[in-house]
Amino acid sequence: GEPLVHAEIEEPPTDKKKGKTSDISQVPMEKPGVTPPPSAKENLAPASKILDIQQTVSGEDLDVYITGNGRLDNYNVFVLRDRPRLVLDLFGVRSTKVKDVLIAGGPWVRQVRVGLHSNKVRVVFDLIHSPKAEVPYQITFDDSHLVVSFKSGLGFPAQ
Image (tube, rainbow, N blue to C red; front, side, top):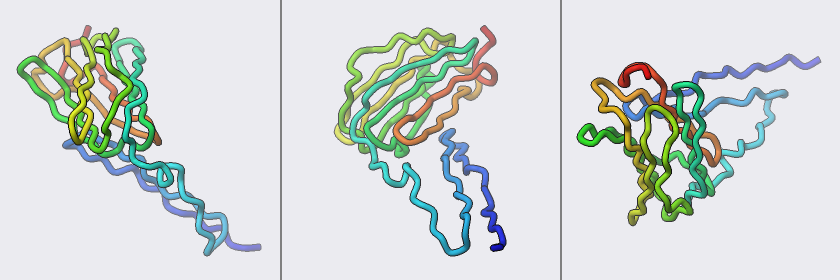
């Protein structure tokens, strides 16, 4: 028989400055010289519209799911400490179906606001507590979803 070929699977690279985890991995090939089909992510165009924002609360953890009509992987995130906020700019996104302020039910975020700018949509998370250290958030994405997760720990006191 043919020898088996095993591709090495790498851990996804992390950009610690932005808290961004990319979801890049290699697909193992079954036969030498056969190219695997492109992933759905490679076929998905960049998002131009936010379709929905939903949240899930589990204990003291809050996950906010932002859904677009394409990839939401072109973003910048930063923290403002005066009136504590986490700001997420989604570049290339030009419209949103989300118009209202979303009231968060978790212990970390008071509300989520969405603003439309000429070259981006800005999502602002109004934080309940003023962080004394780093804000404990993580951003992950897959296909047309971007997930902003807030976890108890570093920057917030236990509830």
